[in-house]
Amino acid sequence: MVSTPLTPLSTHPARIRAEIQALHPQIVEWRRHLHQWPELGFREQLTAEFVSQKLQAWGIEHQTGIARTGIVAVIPGTRPGPVLAIRADMDALPIQEENDVPYRSQHDGVMHACGHDGHTAIALATACYLSQHRDSFAGTVKLIFQPAEEGPGGAKPMIEAGVLNNPDVDAIIGLHLWNFLPLGTVGIRSGPLMAAVELFDCTISGKGGHGAIPQHSIDSIVVGAQVVSALQTIVARNVDPIESAVVTVGKFHAGTANNVIAANARLSGTVRYFNPQYEGFFGDRIQQIIQGICQAHGASFDLEYRSLYPPVINDDRIASMIRSVAEHVVETPTGIVPQCQTMGGEDMSFFLQQVPGCYFFLGSANLSRGLSFPHHHPQFDFDETALGMGVEIFVRCVEKFFNDNPIRSYSGR
Ligand code: NI
Image (cartoon, rainbow, N blue to C red; front, side):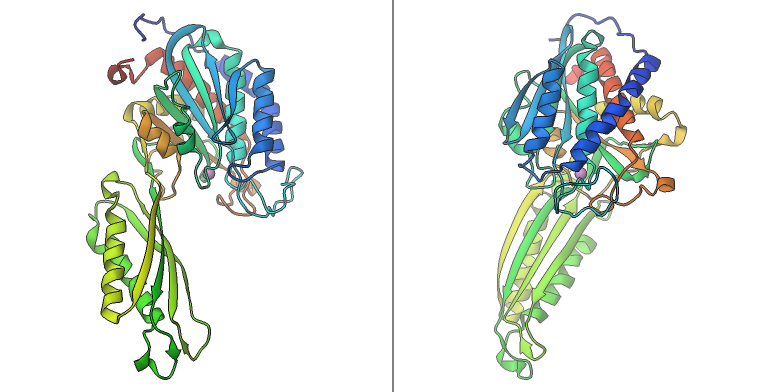
């Protein structure tokens, strides 16, 4: 589709930055509004209304109610070209906020403790800027405001609803504000950035009895304890040591009294890995180990294993495009952090399975202002200076993408 050679569009970094800085008080205001009215996954009604009203006011064509509360906005440039999507998640967490700030959560037990309020504000500001500079890019920008990233996942139903089609998306980018990195840094790498997330729940059934007469019982706690230990051998002995993986048993519930042998034990856990070749592997190994141990002790079991999100894998070309943009935005040689993988998961991965793209971390911690609590902590908050940086990276990525089109060679579009 991009056959006419494009004259490089002149990017005026100083102008872009000045305009975003002028918008900054509003970006902060939007973020704080969203922070005050957080909503859980698939219930982002007020949030979606807020986003829709802004888009409406700026004359941006958009569709609401996708995968219940999602929104897709389309901003065509003045010249035709490929389609770049920018994704932001909108949901909050079931956490009681402990911050004493004027913009603290007004919804009891619900809090934006991961920074998705910031992601929504950044995407909104990007939309606002681009809608006023349609002549600065040759192509179309699609903004995807996604529900329920924290679970059960809004990306997949949005894809199923066709958000990557009509117009078809050529590449996708997205960011996560990141309190594990200081303000003024960007964590970016090609290849795997975040891990696959798989979950399991297992009930081990033995035979209850008197704590002093074990010979007539099958102790589900003894069986379960062996299972917990043995599961650790999957990473230690079955996974290629060059690869990274985690098996965590996060819940182990069994028993009622000191002198009673527990008939049942319930174990729940999570598995993480980067390499997609391990898809299916951990589920099989966990099943085999539990089966073997239960059989050895005459216990039975019921295992439920499910895959939640695949790993987040960045495309080399889009990653290097964002990296070169980010280098100019952070303006310090130490500002780019290439080794920033985490075993956390993200459903941005579903988008990245469909189209090439890149997800990255935008440093948002500021120790001197006490803004360094980790994500999902009741005192989580971030340095709002990062908001403007996020917008600047997105805006400059848009201009660079449509000038250089790093994926043209293989997308054939
Ligand atoms: Ni998050």
